[in-house]
Amino acid sequence: MNRKTSSIRQREEIQGYIFILPWLIGFVVFVLGPLLFSLYGSFTNYNVTSRMDFIGLDNYKRMFTGDPLFWTSLYNTFYYVIFMVPLTTAGSILMAVLLNQRVPGTRVYRTIYYMPSVLSGVAVYMLWMQILSPETGLLNTLLRLIGIEGPAWLFDPAWTKPAIIIMKLWSVGGGMLLYLASMQGIPTQLYESADLDGANAWHKFRYITLPMITPVIFFDLVTSLIGGFQIFQEGYVMSQSGDGGPMNSLLFYNLHMWNKAFEVFDMGYAMAMAWILFVIVMILTVLNLKYSKNWVYYEGGDNR
Image (cartoon, rainbow, N blue to C red; front, top):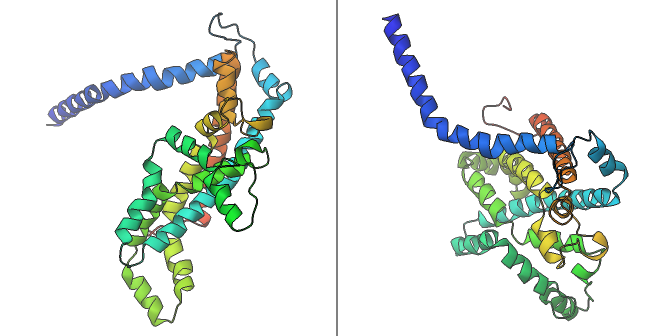
């Protein structure tokens, strides 16, 4: 009986591996293979047309000591992430709270606010380039109506990154949908008990709604953080020439890496930049995971 059971189990295991074989092949060919290739390439002077000569840590040394645009692009990316992530998170939560009220037309408003998050990226960037036009743009036109002279936005190095962040706030509907679904899953008995205790709207949000949606906040923070460090299209399209805009104010990390890889074909250096970005994102993600137990609430009560 044991021998027969063991034979059946082995046959099931073999069948399982056969079923996942296409995925394994795809993973090795399209994920693991390129990953290992880029790791080795980061230690070479590979430029597509020449062979990969091993140069050790030279690419990394040049990155930190011989490339001032590396630090500029890193600063621009951190600036964007530091302001974009908390603002879009707060905006999504605020919008979800407002659209979670039982008022007429709520479904219509939800659809309207969610719509920008499903629009095509390049089309949105072209639209916002018109909105942010210093002379004829809608935003500065509205500011003039209230007596404020708007900035040059994408033509002023001091305002290019705030302009990108404002554009991102326009498309917080995706995060809003997550928070809205989470809020609708909160037991109504908790709010009824709070009403009996005399809690006002702020108290109910602070002590019931906010703790109950912290798992979604944590998920949104991690994904927004990773997505923020991958910003590329905004700098490439909205700087028009693709060189990072006025005074490199839109030269984000991925755009600089793209220029190194596909403008001057310095592939080895670009691969090294990619691995530095991977390390940065991994460290921040691990820190988020480590400290999440101090503020994320799970229904099980053990914060796991």
